[in-house]
Structures are given as C-alpha cells and as structure tokens.
Length: 211
Image 1 (cartoon, rainbow, N blue to C red):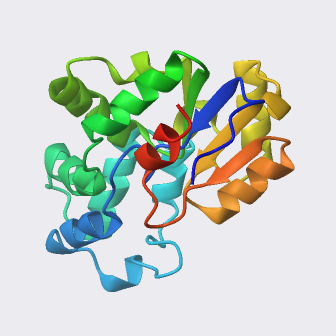
Image 2 (spheres, helix red, strand yellow):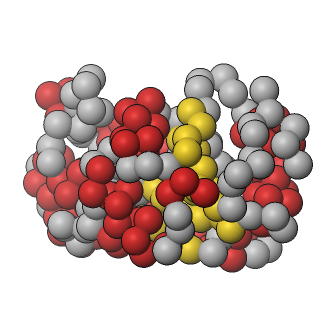
C-alpha cells in the first residue's frame, strides 16, 4: 500500500530490517561457537549481559566491549577479529534496489537515518557498503544518527527529541519509518508522522508506489 507523502518534507529511516537485512541469530550462533554459554542469551532481549546495550549507547568503547566478551567467554586470548566477526555475523546486506529507492526519494525529500547500532557494526557496514555499491553509505542522507554517537537509543522518547533537535526538522512534516511497533509508538509520541514497516513488507514496494 503506497504511503501518502503529500505533507511530508523529511523522511527518517530506521536501518535494520528496513534498509539493511539482518539475522540476529547468526551472531548468537557465532558466539556460541566461540563458547558463549546459554545463560548469556536471554530470549527477551537476545543478550542478558548489559555490555551489548552499553556498546549501543556509547557507554563502553569497542575495546571495552571486546574485553568484556573475553571475560564472558573465559578466553583472554581470543583475537579482536574473531569477536568482531561473530558480532557482525548478523549484519547482512543492503540490496541495490533499496539504495535506488532512497536515491529517488532524496530528489524530493530530505532523507535521514536513525539507528540503534554500535561502532563495530557501523564500521563494518560502511566498509561493505562502499565495496558493494561504490559510494559512501552516509552520502545517501542529509544526516545519519547512530545511538552510540548520540548516546540515546530507541524507543526512549528523549532519543527522538534529540534527533529532531539535531536535524532541525519539524516533526509534523517528517515521516519516521521503522520495523518495530514500540519504536513507532515512541516516534508518534514525539510528534512524528510514522509508518510501521511490518514483517513481510518490503520498503521498495511501499515507496515505489508513492514516487
């Protein structure tokens, strides 16, 4: 179903499962192969140890994260590369057709990104995106906001308020697109227009009908 973009000047995209394909279980399985105990994996939030979420809000550095992973795995000798590879196993690809839709939208709208992510994931994504598509990922957006850089994460209301303030957009003229209902609810509370990209929906089909 096409989106009504008549009163929209700005679009803020989520990253994971909107633009970027993800497989959360791939990282869990990769860490299990490195010796991660089942009690560290919590079905409610994927990882029970707070370091995974501290990394996402910039409260711990990439090196601090790796040191904590070595403690969790009880393996002080495991190299950085192995930890990063396991952590990045969930990061798949951004299909070319989604990139093209963002480029088309950029001709008519101010396009932004707001993602709960971390330094290790985003560095890997930027390198792989440049290799796959021949352009820098941030060049798709007026600005890209990452939780580990702004110190705030969705669905906290303060996170949306910070992105609105930093971008300078008017919420009533701005569409926020995310795949998680609680993130959509919080964005709506912040005054943004919203579109919930539900499981099974493809952003290219949604937006191509509105271009």
